[in-house]
Image 1 (cartoon, rainbow over the protein chains, first blue to last red):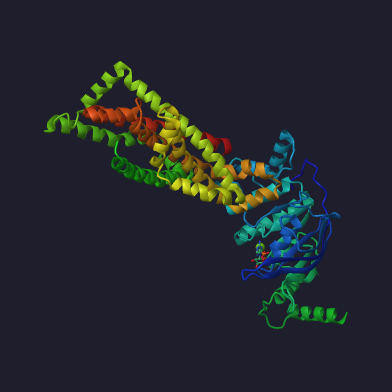
Image 2 (cartoon, each protein chain N blue to C red; image 1 turned 60 degrees about the vertical axis):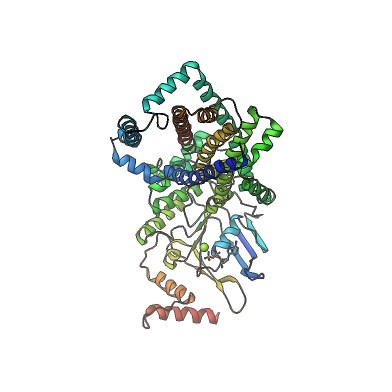
Length: 284
Length: 294
Ligand SMILES: Nc1ncnc2c1ncn2[C@@H]1O[C@H](COP(=O)(O)OP(=O)(O)O)[C@@H](O)[C@H]1O
Ligand SMILES: [Mg+2]
């Protein structure tokens, strides 16, 4: 594991209280995308936001980053309200969004906080490029590297901010399955080296199970318009996790059924475990 | 010169301008794109090929021209031979008239191009970046651009006189529009994802402009400058044909009146060489800009 020479900012807690967001609809009215979202995220925790496409995951992430404003409710980082484009957090988008005319190194440099001394900045960038295993590619242009490498550069740029909160919007969504697994492991290594609070948007159940301390399921409930939190699941397993773990399989089946995907297995120990768990919840 | 003759010359020159528009924008982008560079690299050692290859057609034309005048049955007052043109160059060069004409024409083009580009960059940036500026300025600019360039000439002559300023102003008008148009359109189409990225990483309006927006539009800006330069030469000749006592346009006009076809050929060749040379300078500027922001 890479040992970092630069002290990093402390992880910060995030509080989302009663948050809602509406957008003007094409018909002239308004469309509620998010309503009554309540979530407390502990400092240093990894939270996965899971939900069907278009349910408002990115919108919620943008609200936390300060790129967008909520219509209702409060968002705070470490007790103070989220500012317009809050510099205590850093975002990595679904697309790498590297400046095509800059080298990888200089793209990562863009993430450094304003007023970083030149030498210190250069050292920090070199260190981060080592961390995301891109030190050999530092002088290449974005068009000369693969999608996985570009996502790692984007991750390094976000880390250069020394963020208290790292916001990742489907960072591995566009990658092939194998690269995605490697990237997930890398993200955990990074989290161990630079323990920021991580909010990770994903639509991949396995990714959420592999990475998150808690999985937050977003979606619509009942007849009310807009998505809200349907369920928060504690994964409660130490990382790194065995991808074939039986306990995770139970959670996976539960998440899939909540997402409306029926598992096609006949009655087995997993479905029995789910039923038992549901009965317990209903009883308590 | 009669009104009918004026419109007669204006129509074909407008045509040339618009086709130069398309060519230059295509070239501007491909020159910055990856394909060309990679192919160039793949060719490896053959550095001489672009130079020799580009010279092939001019040499063939020269040969055909020479052969036609040498073996054909065309009198030299209709088609002068290459030697006649060289002779004309020697003649005009020794009296100093050729150098004076080249110098004054180049000076007018460079001045008008410089003023026009600066005006184009400033107004183009305003329109491209600010919605308010676009709402206020776009209709007026569009209307001004719709005025055929030569329509300004009588007004300029009346208000500014027939001396230097009226010619430089006409060239300025011609140079400003292509820069303004290409730059404002390119700025409006900078990838919104990259602009949002800049915002997310704490860039203010000005640093967003210098870090994201301007570098993103360099290829478009350079092709705008290329067009502006081509327009500048076009407007120079127009201005000098109409009212002047010096310059390459005057040389053309004067030679036409005196039936000196050799001098007409000379003036055209000199214009081609000057135009290509100044265009090559823009190529150098492009390389420098891309390195500066690359
Ligand atoms: N700026 C916006 N203006 C209007 N509608 C928006 C805007 N941003 C997002 N939306 C709408 O909000 C919904 C949720 O979008 P998003 O948060 O991107 O979903 P997800 O990331 O979960 O796939 C979508 O229907 C989208 O059309
Ligand atoms: Mg999304």
